[in-house]
Amino acid sequence: MDQPLKSPGQSALDDTFHRLFELSRSEPAATLEQRLDRLARLRAVVADNEARFEAAISADFGHRCATETLFAEQIFVLGEIKHTARHLKKWMAPRRIATALQFMPARNRLIPQPLGVVGIIAPWNYPLQLTLAPAIGALAAGNRVMIKPSELTPITLELGGKSPAIVDLNTAAERIASGTGAYHGEWGFRELSKLKPVFYRSPLNRLADLYPPYGSKIARLQKMLRLMS
Image 1 (cartoon, one colour):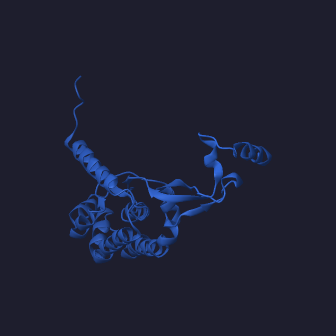
Image 2 (cartoon, one colour; image 1 turned 120 degrees about the vertical axis):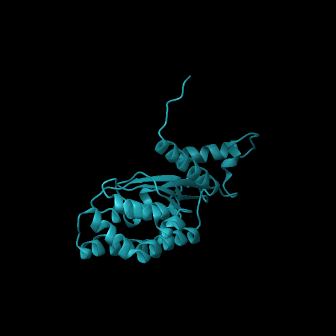
Image 3 (tube, one colour; image 1 turned 135 degrees about the horizontal axis):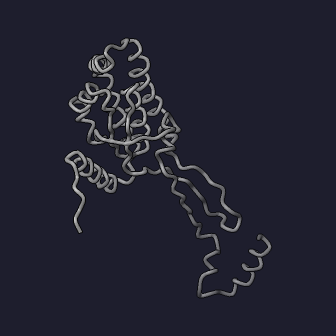
């Protein structure tokens, strides 16, 4: 059966996705230190290139006030990274979940884990903020990231692709992508994580008696469970 023809751009996109997918599989759960390092490098990209981003955005808009770019884009992103880094350890902590009486003294936990590869499709109106704000949540959640800036801001897009700082960051984030709605702060971390339920069974719990070979205690255990049901 003939395979559909792919454009060069589609082939590059597929190659990037598969490369990131394999990286995500080889590192299913990035450590706190790894995530903080990626956020720090993303912060450096913005902080070290403020004037270049300001000039590129202004050129794309046919002129835009530098103050608007500073407050609505750069300072916003820098503040979001700082807030995320400060609270990330707490966000990553397992959440305690109640355990039914018949399973005591076992424990239940919900552990946030990365989704894998996250795509970000950025709009044009605030090209820096609306590109990097979702990436902050995605990287904090331990994901690999693909980013597609808007074609309506070509100079900003070109700067993102050619910046040495961006290229250096590409060990954690690639320059092609998709997006999400709730992506700021803890909401972004939660939105771009999956909660894995983990049950820690205690050796003191005798539910193991429910499995063959059945011992003499099974009748009493059955009676107890009926009373609890």
